[in-house]
Image (cartoon, rainbow, N blue to C red):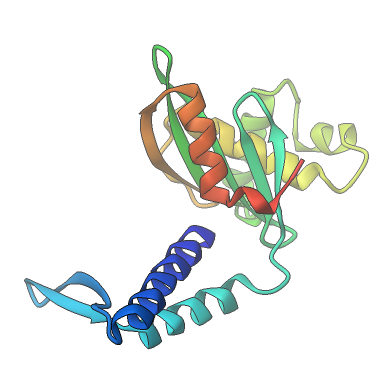
Length: 196
């Protein structure tokens, strides 16, 4: 969402500069699908400002910063609540090529019933933990929820697992060099909001 907000602010700046230079501007020309046809839509500066206000409100003034949790994969995580986390990182998709993944993990979905808990236990076993209880006991603080979310996210990326209840993963870009992947991740999260 920060990416959308940055792009909208850039569009508004261009609109305002164009209006200052020429007394008018062309607006943002977009298309959308409506009733089986592609229709044009023109957003003027006021409409762009409304979108900026909307996304700013959705993000909230207290939005948590991204935190680097794994430098090797350029993995960043930030909490959206005590149990929900957003993550982004890159991983291999060929010889010396990388894909960038983003996702959202809702840990409450992995604790709902025996089947969901079995999925979470299976994931944690792949990280050499016997069970969720063993995992929690090994983590001597409340960060266990975030660490478990990171394990879930990485597992869904590495196994090409389909989206399951509590984890959604998207491929943002593919076939990048390592430097391109790192740069893309940092731009995507808005590097100015990164805490290492």
